[in-house]
Amino acid sequence: MASSPSPLLLGSSSSKTLHIHSHGISCDKIRGLFVRCSSLRPGVRASRTSVRGDEMNLVSRRDLIGLVLGVSTLILDSFDAKGAGLPPEEKPRLCDDACEKELENVPMVTTESSLQYKDIKVGQGPSPPVGFQVAANYVAMIPSGQIFDSSLEKGRPYIFRVGSGQVVKGLDEGILTMKTGGKRRLYIPGPLAFPKGLVSAPGRPRVAPNSPVIFDVSLEYIPGLEADEE
Image (cartoon, rainbow, N blue to C red; front, side, top):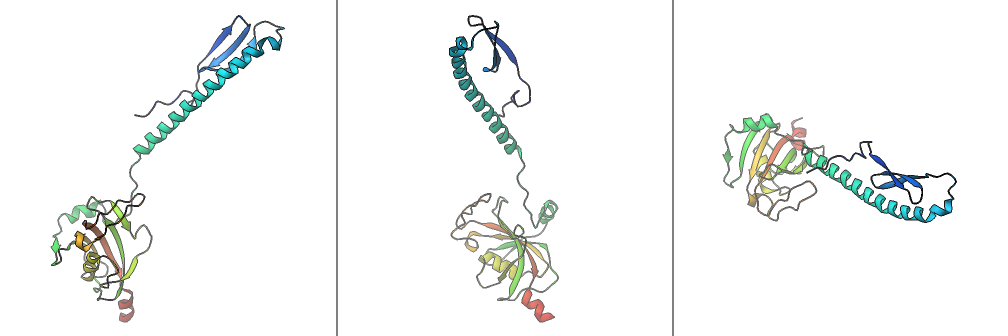
């Protein structure tokens, strides 16, 4: 529960005057802190109030420490409350909310290896031959939808040689049957994903060993194949 803003932080304060008649001193007191003292009797020598002034300074220091600690707590509580209310950071995706709705009606394809996929968009170009380099964008997620890796955040497609074991088995297999310009969601079972798992990173979930993962992939182009066609 967030603390209410301190009146001190809002620029308001309450004050009262403390009269010490036995020494003829009047002090303004704000929130337990002595800030100004004056003599009620003219001509009083400074030496008569020096002891009492030292005592008040001691009280003032204690009150000041308490005041600083209290204000610090209020500020920290306020920051925590604002931080807790912030929406989660939006990460770029290959499949937005409208795409997710459409994907519900797309039939699931299951291969002999138990890899499953749905085509978000069927490409119009060629499929990559085994051993060719491909340039692909991807968003890798755990089943809950949390992203643990993404080429979109790096700002460039990932280039690798397809079918040569440079990526996880499920991604290798899934891209081989795609066409250039296409997008696909791969549901990769544990044995075709990360047998040893992946450790968590700041803002990234952990991938448990042999746990299923989801890859949204778009096949951007096939560098070697396009060069041959030209």
